[in-house]
Image 1 (cartoon, rainbow, N blue to C red):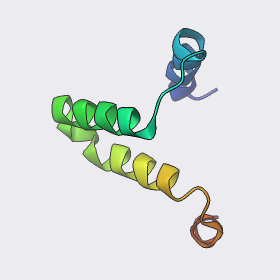
Image 2: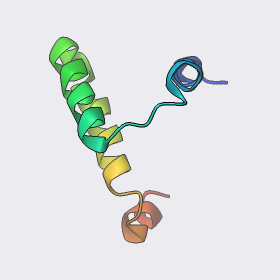
Image 3: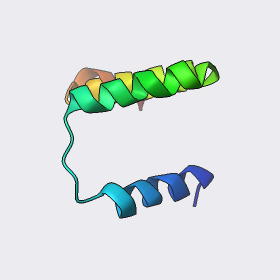
Image 4: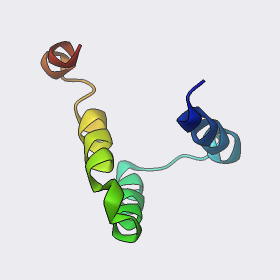
Length: 63
């Protein structure tokens, strides 16, 4: 188990029943980066990955 899995599991346990929009998620990611600018690149990579999940060409290129 990766260390990050703990945070992901906590998120699922605490908020797993909620429904959110991508607009809400985008706002929270922006807030997080504003408060923690050292995480700008990883958050950008996560956001880009999420945005391109349905684009098979990008997924194949990263494998």
